[in-house]
Amino acid sequence: MKKIGALIAMLWLSVGYVSAQENHVVLISIDGLRPEFYLDPQWGMVNVRQAMQNGAYAEGVRGSFPTVTYPSHTTIVSGVLPAKHGIYYNTPVEPLGISGKWFWYYKDIKVPTIWTAAKDAGITTAGVSWPVTVGAPINYNLPEYVILPQGKGEKKDEIKAMLQESNPKELFQEVQDYAIGKFGEYGASIDFFTSDQNKSRMAAYILKRYKPGFLALHIALLDHFEHEQGRDGDKVRSAIVGADVAIKTIMDAAEVAGISKNTTFIITGDHGFVDIHTQFKPNVMLNKLGLYDDANKEGWKAYFQQSGGSAFLHLRDPKDKTSVAKITQALAQLPEGIQRMFHVLDKEALTKAQGDPNAALALAANQGFSFGASATGEMLAPASGGTHGYLPTDFKEIQTGFVAFGKGIKAGTALPLIGQEDIAPLIAKLLNLSLKTDGVLYPGILAPVKK
Image (cartoon, rainbow, N blue to C red; front, side):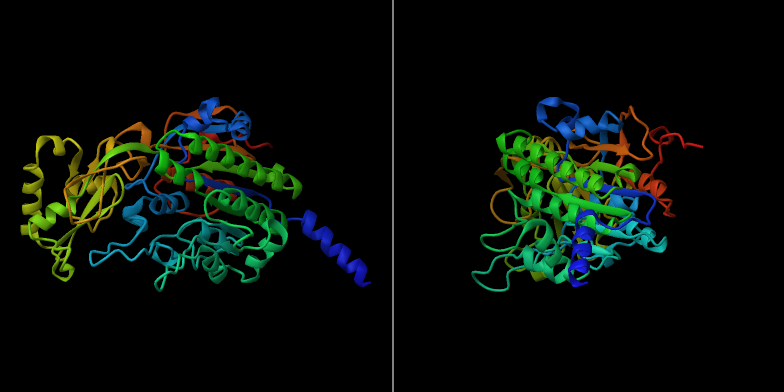
């Protein structure tokens, strides 16, 4: 009897159990995805290009402000922009010194999301490395989180962090036993190079084993190499091919699990990328104005939170109009060459862009330029590679992508441009969830319902 039981368990693990969930949505975010990666065959996204022929795609996706990872991913699953969902940047505003912390915790999101809507509907969910999901109401969760160094010689630890926040706790061991092998110095890794492949294998295992109604995966190797090399380079080209293979791994898992006919795949990203050559450091300007002293940070009055292609002005006293007037005048008196590097968003424009409502104003860089956080040295510094964080309406290069295929998606649908907030309404429709969003559900993207 024991042998029979063991055999049944092995079969169950290999092919999964029969899913009670009628529809499944797999959401895959490729950090730094640009539309040309799937529109232009030279980039090598063979699997995604084949799948999109039987589905829908957008020629561009307008992102969130700033166009960085954590605000964007929260917009994707909430259907509202940062001003409402509350994840304004990747990292908290820290004028007294940057700690290395990010917005890892789900409790910081101020609105309902797909995760909460699915839980209310009794739908099983799963997440692998999805931002802002530590402590989220996700049934099977391996969140993106990092334990920061506590002492000299220590390194950040993403593996221990995933173990610490895994839900359920045994899931971390399961993916090692059945998907990728043991983490360790000579074992599996989720840090660069092999990260996309290992994360996709973890997600594939969860999909086969537990058949969640909603699974979200975030892979980020492409972003790492676009930062290093800019919009093009051998590592960038290799990374996008690797991301395509990672997606095929998940597609194959749905086939093996016997749920592919009931599964919708949504491939998207958080932002595009812009090549840069020069960095402007606005906190140096504040230092010269006596509003921010890097040597005596306790006495700060104003501070620019840099976010790549944007910078947001924060005041110690939100009613400090005198400092705002000084800063506005100083910006207007900068040399014309520096002024041409960016444009200023006053409070009204910032509100329209739905960025951080706590900021007094924002700077949005033009192409080729970015912002730095340092308050020391010269205002300008050389820069290389690429970055993001720009105002999403400024230029096409910062747009990300969208491809959807599978159950419920009309074949051959092409949309010129959609908003990042439009993805959550589509997921909600496919899973029959109740979620209030600011996005648009485009009816032309949906396949006719068979009667």
